[in-house]
Amino acid sequence: MTGAGGTIAGGRVARAAPDGYTLSIGNNVQYVMAGATYALQYDLLNDFEPVALLSAGPQVLTARKTMPANDLRGLIAWLKANSDKASMGIGVGSPGHIAGVFFQRETGTRFQFVPYSRGATQIIQDLMASQIDMTITDAIISLPLVRAGAIKAYGVTTKTRSPSAPDIPTLDEAGLAGFDISLWQGLWVPKATPKNIIARLNAAVTDALADPMMRARLADLAQETFPRDQQTPEALRALQKAEIEKWWPIIKAAGIKAE
Image 1 (cartoon, rainbow, N blue to C red):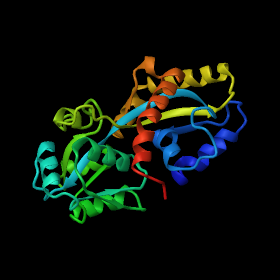
Image 2 (cartoon, helix red, strand yellow):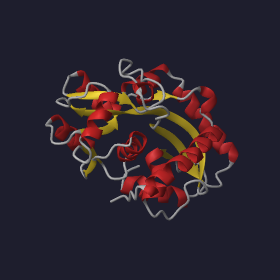
Image 3 (cartoon, rainbow, N blue to C red):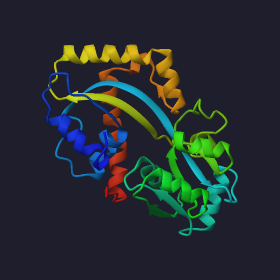
Image 4 (tube, helix red, strand yellow):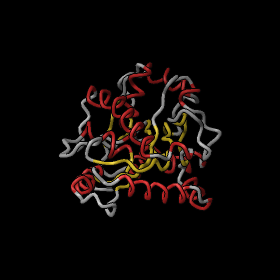
């Protein structure tokens, strides 16, 4: 789902006939964060029926390769010694932006957010050129450059290490207890879709996610499937609700509005 952070497509799904033929594969950008950054014409919790949790993966806190700090504690100390001087590249309202705000709050650091309208590719290019100091972005984008030595990595944003980068610590274990923000995907249908249709769709999804080739392809994208008992409509609804309760106050307090 693209266009205005996926909200245009989300609106079409919310208004579609509840017959099982209109589906929405989205992530926590569209189904959590957009509710705090856009003035939506639909309700994220009440205008959709959850079908299944699909996969999740980390973001990575990275910095220019010339950054003096070699670990997270050193980075935090450097940021405090250079308050308001450092810069973080972000897409406004993106998971990286929100993770950056959370990072500031949890570390007591102050740095400048530099907005980019052309996405993570331009941010990474400027990071490699040392035009900005840091960014937090999807692992699939940053990990190849970390391995090549073009940028530094200080930690992944999820509670557990990523199988795609087992040598990179989590921010939690590197010193930021409780830091946890992932990029997760789910499947939704319009409100009032019959339960038997949802059950059939869920069964098809869980069968697909059990396929070794599918799991290998997701691993290539630094995404992991959820355990089978979490691939349910109930688990998706519970996660979405918990994430809204966690992130909306942080987003609104920071005054983040999508552009």
